[in-house]
Amino acid sequence: MEKHEDATSILSMLDLDNIEKTISQSYYDTGPEKPPKIDAFKALIVKRLRQIPRDQELYRRLWNDENLREICD
Image (cartoon, rainbow, N blue to C red):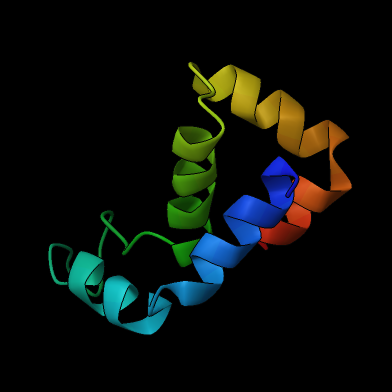
């Protein structure tokens, strides 16, 4: 299985609605601290699974890899 398929299968097994609700509880509904997007959460999961050491490297890969962008929405 390729790396993007691993990330896709792992993300498909997660209850992302429940995760988004849990993460959002730490933020106010209005004001400067808006709740984080679930897409950012997915990107962090992919970063960990693919062992990407820096955010800049993740951004570069997202820019260049259509499959990775699809995984992260």
